[in-house]
Length: 458
Image (cartoon, rainbow, N blue to C red; front, side, top):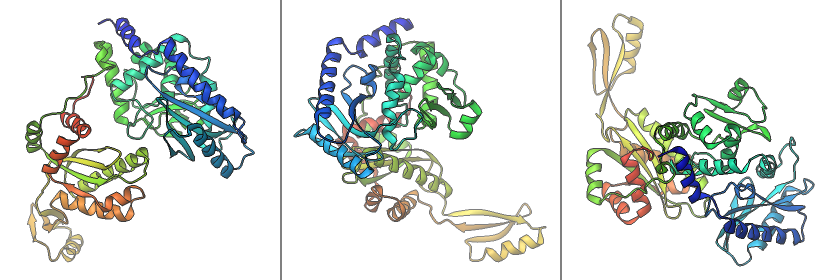
């Protein structure tokens, strides 16, 4: 299919119509007006984000409304006032108190997902007071810079990244935030040019629209494979969340699309979970072990997932240090009741003893030291090809025992909220894993996709 034809068909599906935009605009403006009429120490309210810049996708119902305070307002009053105004906006609608660097209110109103976020009023070049203070400046930087054609380019890029699983600012996604998609289209000019350039990205790529830093300085400062220097803050890489795998995935998908354009890159087929018998057959062919943890109460998904990801990686490294070979590991959660961390190994069990090679027999002093240090061993010392050799008992010969130990240590040393879950962590039997697969559609889709191990765009 011709590339331009694909773009046109995708845009027809993802670009909001005039009626939808008018309805959303009226709703957002009504909330801003309500906040402006409320008594308090705030100076104004402002709609920010993709909707404010008209780069959002059809059906997106996320509205980010910032309540902006003068810097003269102290931190305690700033937080209290922000929460008071947020709760007043939601009234009887469902809301929760979320947390970034400071608390804010988010929830649902009339089918929209609304966030009411307090921030300080800062000018460009001024140091930020709270981490969210940059968002209104991002708005001002981008407004008027993107042409209508480029706004469509942002929409195509966002849907492309969604389709290949590389879109999102949360830790779970490890991907490209919405703000970065706008900067990328500003940099390259169009979605087509983005594809051509991303297909040729190097090991380290630097984008600095404001020319804050030269390339070498940026690489030294941020030490990341993909550096997009924030135009309004030279000390921030706004692409820092993008993992190396996701970075390479974007490259590979861009090459594949240029070679053979298709709508499947934007709208991949939904993974159809395997049947139970196929799952059992697959599990009989490989070595998989999993941990199940109860989901911490009243914990933010992004925090929990970040901790689970780090614990999974740390545990995988620990397993390898004990001579097991890890093929891969991953994490899943329903964000309500459970977290499951899955490991695929070459073997679940290894030899109970380990051969340990010492110095050459001809090295007199090291030989004496080695023999003195290796008493009470399983077998040896013996001489093999001129070197001393002993056999020692391994601390762990079954990966499951090592996982139990990792959980016990984590229950003591990890931070809340994951720490509480690790105290009740259990090693999943294959039968229980199959049971969860059968009962939980989300887990079934996740595990099927992971076991298939194939990129969505291929």
